[in-house]
Image 1 (tube, rainbow, N blue to C red):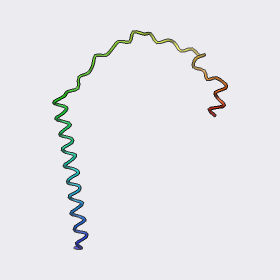
Image 2 (cartoon, rainbow, N blue to C red):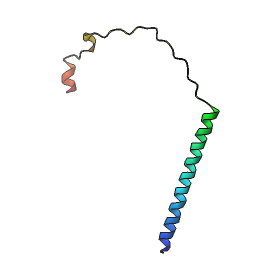
Image 3 (cartoon, helix red, strand yellow):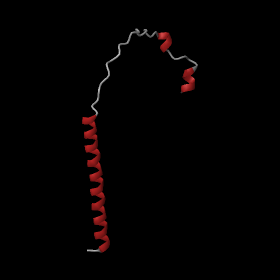
Length: 70
């Protein structure tokens, strides 16, 4: 086999191995952090204001704006 081909295959295998090792370390680090610091949901705050009904006047687009858009 050609030495450059053999060298490129070895380098590729080493690179793939390093990538998978780093990914496994990241995954297990995240799993450990999830167990150490669990998520605590905050209580939902109640909305005291009533939403105002939207009228046709406020939702309509003015005729002078339409030519500027198109």
